[in-house]
Image: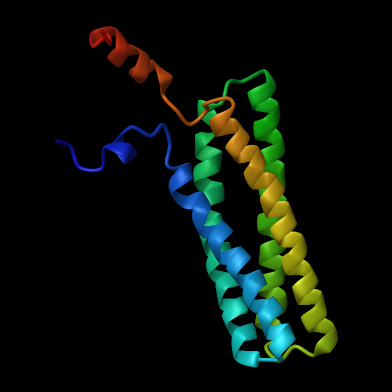
Length: 161
């Protein structure tokens, strides 16, 4: 029995990293909404920390995503979806980096900056949702992260009765 056979069977490790920025950035938005409603600076600080963590994780996701491009056919609908996904996620990560700079250089955000920060997180979550959907489309509709040749070989070696 092998250790972590799921990881061993992956074509690339992009899927290992993509879930972290999603969770951290959505968490940052939720904490900031609650912070605004409750007028709670500690919850705002938590939102900033989650934004920072999500952005660091996004760098790993972008890097592994760029490495994973080789598993997508060079032409056809999957390649077109991959280009849209890549562009959306690069824009999303850039927006997150900009929000990190805003948060880092304005530790005591006033009302106007807090609203801008919240708006930025809302836009970030929207871009994230559309970009992640295109990534899911690549995997689930076009099977770009799946090595189907291994599955086909296994079926030929061990046919079902």
